[in-house]
Image (cartoon, rainbow, N blue to C red; front, side, top):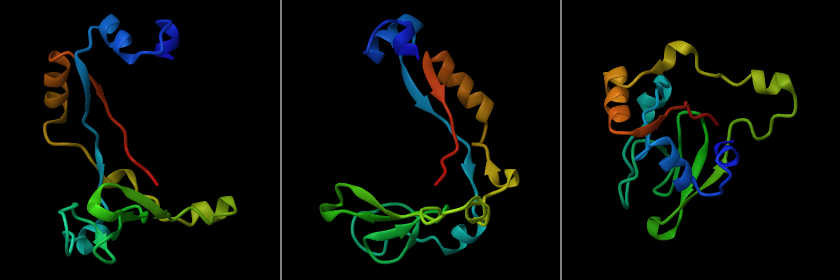
Length: 130
């Protein structure tokens, strides 16, 4: 929509028009207790974060999405997800979606956003989902 409004296909033009120096993201996180209890560092290879590792290349995130790390650790691909075989609304509703109580804001959230905005950054936020 902004590209259309400013009659351009270049986000750099939009940034300059809005006085934005750059982009930043500071999003809440979803806390998955079962995931946190099972997550470990990668068993071998380049560090890749805390996940539920099935082997040294395959891991699962808190939502139940399974990824595979490519050769040489240059990329990752999505292997499967918890909703991919759903055929009905009831199938989707059977998924154990997190509750609002599981959402955790970053520490000093408002203050950190304020600092970013005063640095002329466009601050975005969102909660990832499967």
